[in-house]
Image (cartoon, rainbow, N blue to C red; front, side, top):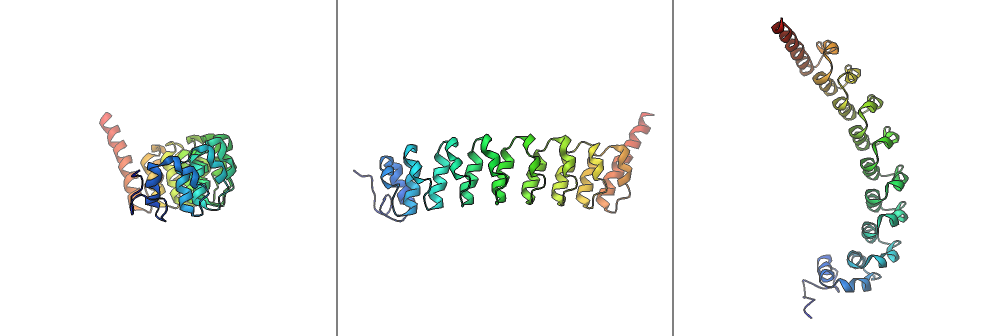
Length: 228
């Protein structure tokens, strides 16, 4: 029938590329290979087989097969993978699962899974991640928290998080970071803090911070003189 080409399109080889090409041309045969001994053949077949046949692969011994199943099953059906031992499977679940089940992965041991959750959760449900042990997770929380709640992360142990906080805070609230130990945090503050607090940075030990503070103060003074 011309649907198999040696060294290019074939299901009876251990070449993912050739197997995929075979099922691409012959998707109706995929269901017959869902129990094949070769894991890659099963995984590729799972991409093309009708969804109704994938339930038999939920407990497949190979994580690549389970990832495919987690990607293809309807979102309401993938709660069975919440405790899957493979992080990639759980990442797929975190990215697709319904919001009502999303927080069940909040204590996942893998930071990438938690990061995926933090990206999806409604803003009002991010507070439990403010003290997360992973820096990337806390940075994403700092990027998404409501402005009025940013003060909760102003004392984070990471200057990267505090910089994000300083950037997003209102000029009035940013003043609480004027004496931050990290000069880049203070530099960010110097760019936006209200003038009534700016003089506190005029003698900052970091030249770049002092320069910004003094420029803003001098600019204000000159503007007032010109108005007079």
